[in-house]
Image 1 (tube, rainbow, N blue to C red):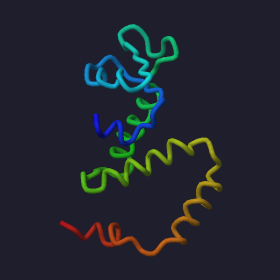
Image 2: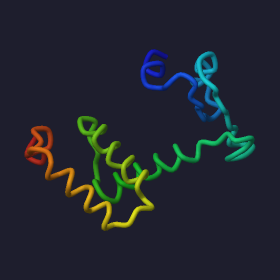
Image 3: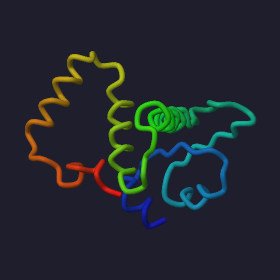
Length: 118
C-alpha cells in the first residue's frame, strides 16, 4: 500500500479487475472494477489501457528485444510506455524527438557496453 500511496495522486481514479489484491485501494481511491467474465468495459470501468500496454510489452520482448532482463526492465518498460503514448504521432516527429533527446545527453554508463556483460 505504501508504494501506491507514494506513486498515485490523491483523488485519482483507478481501473482494476476483480482480483482481490486491489481491494485495499478502495479506502484511499476511487476504484472502478471490471469483471472480465461479464464484460471488458462496463459503467466506465475497464482495464483496456493496461491490457494494451502489457500486450505491447510482451510483443516487444518476443519480436524486438528477444529477452528483457530484470536489470533493464524499467528502461524497457519506459520505452514501451513512450511507444504506447506516442503511437499516433508521425514517425518523423518521433525520430526528431528521439534524436534530439539522444544528442542532449552524454553517453550512458548504464547502457554503454551492456552487450559485453555476462
